[in-house]
Amino acid sequence: MSRDLARSVGSDAPDWPRKHLLLGVFVSETTYEEAADRILAAARAGVPATVDHMSVHGLVLAGQDASFREVLNDLDIVAPDGQPVRWALNRLCRTRLLGRVYGPELMLRLCQRAAGEGIGIYLYGGEPDTLARLRTNLVARYPGLHIVGSEAPPFRPLTPEEESAAVERINGSGAGLVFIGLGCPKQEIFAHRHRRSIRAVQLCVGAAFDFHARRKKMAPRWMQERGLEWAFRLLSEPRRLARRYLVSNSIFLMKVGREVVWSNGRHGGR
Image (cartoon, rainbow, N blue to C red; front, side, top):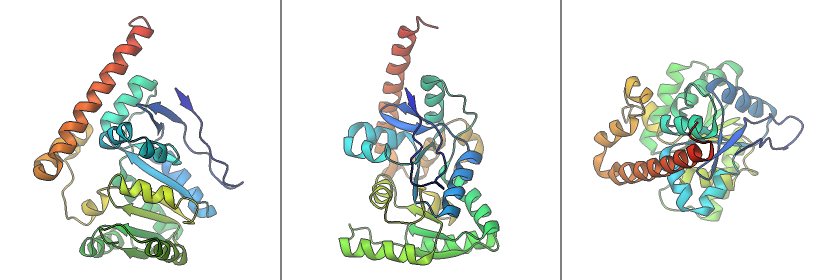
């Protein structure tokens, strides 16, 4: 099943990429180029928007939590972040995506274009030391990039007053792009809750802060292309990620396998 979810936020709002229903979540059929173009169009026009990068873990969480699923289905772009998500989208929804839209990679592409266009960015999430290193690395990589603000919120839940103050700081900075690195599902819930109040494009980018601050290593490209990034991260952080990947991957494979069997039966095995 698919549907067009272009949201009428105003005459300047971009037409968001088409979405397809994948295991209960509407995932965007998009590419790096298309996503970046639509995101920057919204940022230039001052149109609030929300962007997420969908992993296997996120899909499985959404399948177990109806309220989180509703949050995801109300975002403007839910890009296929993981290769298995892209493969499932191609197989079950008959898309023809040649590549995924990986959050850390899209973040770099947007920073490069933002530097050239003078669009300010705001970094929200991570730890203070990670943010300091991230700022240094991004400015060194993209001279002219305007990082108009950054903050590492406490790990505890914020009070309503603290969260309102954070929104005021973000809006007061004049940022066009707000990169959020709080982890799933906290970042998606935060972005959705402030989809009207934050006057910028919010992008949930997961571990991108740690990667670009060089606090954690990214998987080699050959592993990324073969859908083995989870194995690299599992070996890097076995105690923290073992349950997430082993359980989530098993559930995902079971659900996709069931959908493939059902689809083959419906189409007579063709």
